[in-house]
Length: 270
Image 1 (tube, rainbow, N blue to C red):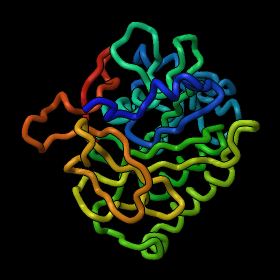
Image 2 (cartoon, rainbow, N blue to C red):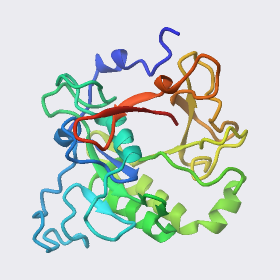
Image 3 (cartoon, one colour):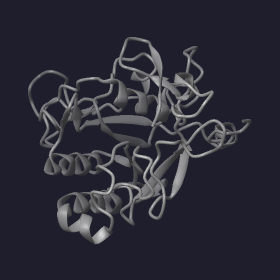
């Protein structure tokens, strides 16, 4: 259906991105060498790559484009999901490659910067304390937007109080980000976005459903809710996420973005 999208063209008339804005992607590792991502990757200019020294004194050694909080080292292990999310946010525009990021700029190194905060690695998931450290790292190192395309299992928590009782350290870290991440003249306070979850459930999953977070559901190209998306009280906005369970829809009805393979692109849903 025409216009079943995020209306980028209208937004781009005002801004295609801003290189002073850093977006932390808490996810799998990003393929930082992807030619459609590398120009818009955040670079920690206070650090010297590969020297084994914490040059900027931020507590993390060799964190050039971010940090692997799952493995507790600076080696970011690239995977498709994190790379796909990064490209959706800020793949470079107007450079001859297949896709464009929402805030990828004009092709003149003026897109938003992507910081890779790895909290997943294959089948492994960072602990709550590691995720909290990633969130604090993002705020302390200049990120003002935090993208979390993940959620805990459906129905695990159904109220803010039950979630906060179990995950107070995580909530405290999110609160820290929202209160302390800022860019003078642009944004005062960080913005935390979370996925509603992909279980087709009538209650969005946490942390997204927590009252202070922006919780994102999914719709497909016919402007209906994706069959897999969680929804309901606690959800705030929706974005294109594709469809895989309706007659006439198939793999191509996902979102095209960067994947962790040289200069490749792929279609994923969620």
